Structures are given as structure tokens and as C-alpha cells.
Length: 401
Ligand SMILES: *Cc1c(COP(=O)(O)O)cnc(C)c1O
Ligand SMILES: [Zn+2]
Image (cartoon, rainbow, N blue to C red; front, side, top):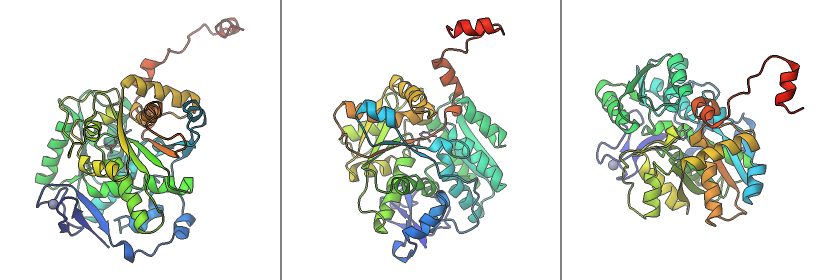
């Protein structure tokens, strides 16, 4: 059993109500379970495949889920990068290995399932790219029409390709993500379309399983959990989930939740560093990491709680630091990620170099999306292929043999 509850005023709502924020005070909602009535054991979970649905007892879906077999992503030990940084226990959870290449699939398997469970007839989102790719695929699987709003000219090529190919109605607006979200929220509320941005509390339920899986894979709670922060849904989701595990007595402490933003788009970092009571939106966010190019993070209130309650922190990294870590992950670890994803590891590099974190910590960095999402940024950073005549001599000559 569960209900929706307001994180600010505590008002409670039935799970079937189609609301995205508290009708009384306007703050965010969260899904609250009666955890003392949940009787699942760790052993039962361990017998199931590693996936979002391993944890179905603390997910809101009661129908057969709309699933593309999301989750179960690898947790890699970053041996070379860790050695260079003096961090022997540095790990990356590669969320780019999900069905559409980002962690958004964890949210969408639950979100689109809930759309059907609640009897909704269509779904929509605003997106910097990955949410639209994921929603489009899961809507196709669920057999429900989808509308996606993108900031024109600011979405990585692979993501637009996915949204188009999976059959969503794709609309590019001549403004940024924050405006696209305002528009789509209005549209959904006025026209009975189900909104699947991360303001939707059910979507975050799916995303919390990143934390569950990391704990299961590591066999323990990491000391620190590091995520790139855009709308701040994912960091909030992982924190919420781990608190539930704590309430179930499956874990006995929480990791320090650590959020990384791009220097040109860092409202959460400013709130944390400035000890502000809330996040002040930033008007014109700019970064090569388009997935976190967000000035008004909708889940800011939840994210500040996650960071502050766990003794975590937030830090900003420059676009150069992001791209340099994208290359390091690719070339030193064999892990291909899109720029936003590299921000988490780039942030740890920065924090350790500043002496802000302990070198013995066990650190899980979430790398959020796949390299192929944004081929254009990759091509710009690399030398083009060496083109030669099709002769052995020419081949040997370019290889200096
Ligand atoms: C959505 C996304 C993010 C940001 O996640 P939030 O929940 O919005 O903070 C980071 N990286 C990638 C690749 C994403 O798709
Ligand atoms: Zn409220």
C-alpha cells in the first residue's frame, strides 16, 4: 500500500489522483509506502535477476509492467582512473547500458506502466533529449501515444533520432528546456495528458533502483554516491530509495549524496555552497553537457534535502573538465559515455584534488548515458580517421612500420 504525500506540508493524496504537485501548497509530491507491511527479504530479492523489477515490492505498479528489461547495468571498478587519483575504491555504474541508453528507462518503465494503470490515454514530456528517447520507446512498447517537447537545436543527435524513430510526436520549441517544461506541464494539466517529467513522483520510483542495484552489486553501502545533476530528480530518487532500504533494515547507513553540475549551469551548487534555503533558478544555463543544461531544476527541494541530510556536497566542473573525463573514461577504462555522464567522475577528480574527500572512501559514480547519444560532440574532439589509398604500402606507412 502507498499514497502520495507532499514533502512540504505533509498533505496526503490517494495514489490514483492525477496530480504532480501538492494542490494545497504547490510543493513536490513523493510516494510513501507502509514499509512495515512489506514482508520481502533480501534473499528473495537476491534470487531475482538484477533489474528494476527485482524490487517490485517497493514500486507502485500493480499491473504487468511495460518493460524493455531495464536496469541490471554494470558496476565497473575504475582501476586506472582510480589509481591516478589515488582512489582505490572508485566505481562507475554505467546507466548508458539501459535499453535506450540512459537511466531514464528506469523511470519510464514505471512511469508508462503507471500511465496505463491510471487509465491515461496519452503521455508527454519536455526533454533535453534522453527523457524523450526513453518515453518514445516505452510508449511504443505500451501502445500509447507520446508527445515530446525539445529545445530546438539543443538536443544531441542520437536522442532526437530515437524519439523520432520510436514514433513520438516530436516538437522543437524555439526556447530552452525550462520553457519547454512549463509549456508541457500546462498542456498536460489542461488536456488530461499524463506528464512524465521527473516532477512525476512515480517516475522517480523507478530511478531509485540505481541505488538498490549499486548496494547489491557492491555488497555494501558505498560511502559516497555521485550523480550529475540537471533537474535533480535522479539524486533525489536514489536518496529516497536508500532511505527506504534503511527503514526496512536492509542497510544501516546512507552514502554521502554528491551532486555535480556544469560550471555554466549550477544553481544547485550555488545553493549548497551558499547555504541558501532554496535553489535560485539560473536564467541562461549553458554547457556542452546538454543533458544537464537546466537552470530551474524541478526537484531542487528534494535534492537539497538529499545532499544536506547525508553530509554530502555539490561541485561544478567546467566543460573542459567534463570532456577530458569523457575521453579518460573511454580511453583508460573502455567506458563510453555522453558528456553529462562524465561530469560525475570529473567532479570526484576535482573534489579529491581539492582535498575535500577521503581517499579511502568507496565511491559510486553514476555515469548516466551512452557515448552514442551525442556523436557530434565526440567527433569534434577526435582526429578524423586517417584516409589512405587501399595499398599495403600506404597502410604500413601510416603505421610507421
Ligand atoms: C537526465 C539526465 C541527467 C540529469 O538527471 P536529473 O535527474 O535531471 O538530475 C544527467 N545525465 C543524463 C545523461 C541524463 O539523461
Ligand atoms: Zn503541500
